[in-house]
Image 1: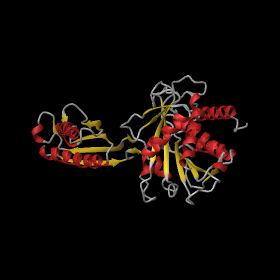
Image 2: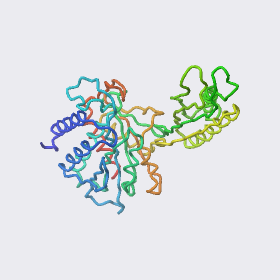
Image 3: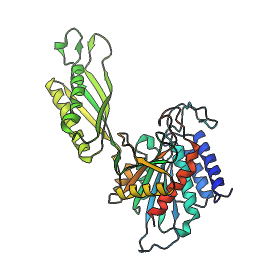
Image 4: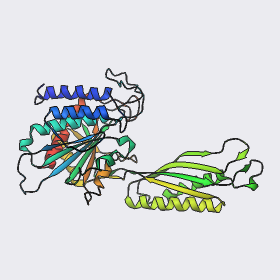
Length: 390
């Protein structure tokens, strides 16, 4: 197949997309997916860097044109590769063959568009200065897969990094772009309230942890309204409450779990401090004891202004339409790349949304990507990456 021919490239990428959709693999289980990506990239003559990753890989296209200022430019593109534990309900002829696993978040598109962009850049490498690293990342749905990649030195020479996501709220040909915060920092908390168990008819013999837990829940929801700037997006959800085993026994323990989402760094720090203070203060007032476990995850994603403007210019030059990217209190571990500590610096990044046809939302069992987006997405990413290294 002649991959320099646009129609044949489109057919080729569509076939690969269907293969990836039929063979979804969960976070850190993407061995078959990784092997297929490796095979396709190697077949196109694209160099694969020898990082010791269990799943996922990093490839590079090296421009052969001399850099005018003598400084090597390296740009990266992140493409996540894992699927979700969902039973597919699409009736597609290429539906998942792995029961209970589905590409319900569009990562099959991410893989395929990334491969397509790499093929396009490899074909024009003589006109490129600098190089582009293509990061095919495992475990995004786990929210920490980026950290597996960052155990390597992949980012040590990267000047900027691009990310993108399938967007079923917009039609094919629409790119969502926004400068500033686009996804939230994701933090998780667990709370254990220790009381003293006793007979349900004699609560005065013990310390009931259930009203303590109820008071804590009410108290936590005041943090946003009384401590966080009203113009800063933030959210707290208590998503699990558990206490007791039967109807006539006051338990000794109540447990809760939940999540906090913030955009601004200072709000993230403030939220953890105020949550601990609120929990411990309320428990003490009731004569109980409380333990807070705080588990931080991906930070907020902040789109660099220069990169956002470049992404918009390229979209318009290709006849696409741009819309303001929707801000979300959902998270994405793409943000870890911009916080990369081993690079010793903040790395500018930009996270885009590519319209895949209006339909079911991501993570829905009937979510479906319009295949007409595959080649345009690959061409768009290749154009953005080309412009960013020249």
